[in-house]
Length: 206
Image (cartoon, rainbow, N blue to C red; front, side, top):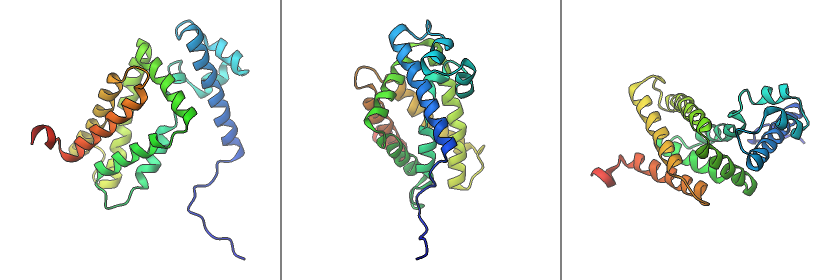
């Protein structure tokens, strides 16, 4: 019988899976050490030893120390979710749905990792600065996606304004998040902010 075509994405190869496991192990050990002895006092050498890899391997996966905390694969998930949204949705509706899908699909252990990362990023000045740089990079990424869906160039004024507004929502939600429910409140504020963008803030200024 002929094999039927599948809409499922191809499974990563063995090499990619091994790299993903190594990256996850290094980050797991880094976060454990940061929690136990502090971010500033933990060295790359200690992280490498805990993960049973060389310092050069740590730097191959995480070029800078802040990357050990900042890195996640949510961007890839959200890009995939955004491109999968029905064409009848507006750009803002598609963005909002992709945020829900990207964060809503996190398993319990992934959510716990997010919570740990969020705590560190809010408490360490070096990580706060690096995270703002990450937000700037994400503006460009969102602009590319909005341009792709809308048919406008990525440097179009409207595309840049919307992309900046989306990141503004994320920055406001990130800095406001605090306490044991920080991640949950962050996600709620993201969704509320996207709903306000979708309505043109009519509930506030209408």
